Image 1 (cartoon, one colour):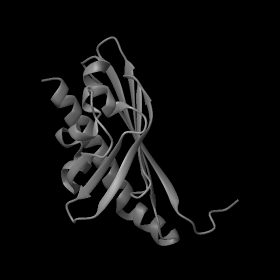
Image 2 (cartoon, helix red, strand yellow):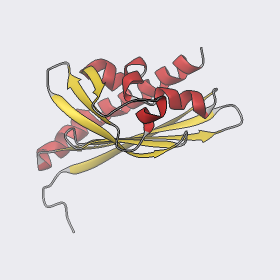
Image 3 (cartoon, helix red, strand yellow):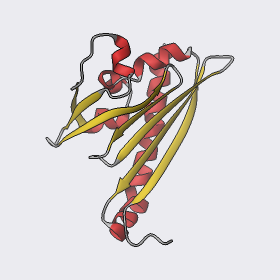
Length: 157
């Protein structure tokens, strides 16, 4: 079956080795700490607030935890954790933003291999495909790479 002019999903996946245990990386993979290392959050997001109850640190990683994301331009989106495997994998989904973020943590001899995968959709059929090729994919790849570099820098200091 062909594309029929619908939305196109793009996947960007990058990995980095960080000299720290998975537990330390895991602590930063929560909504209220993204601004410390995630380039996209730093550039585009004014605030991220939990909309689900957070009584313990573990609540920030549990499936069903929700957040309200307010962009610098004032648009508001909602996100949710849709998968969580303690200190191994966490998946954030925002259908309003057309994106899914997945983080995989694999222990290594020297620390942790962190994989950051971003799946996103640009609407607008052929126009969306064109815009993605023209700039969105390259910009997103740079943001993912920059985020991993900042995460590494933050954790290895």
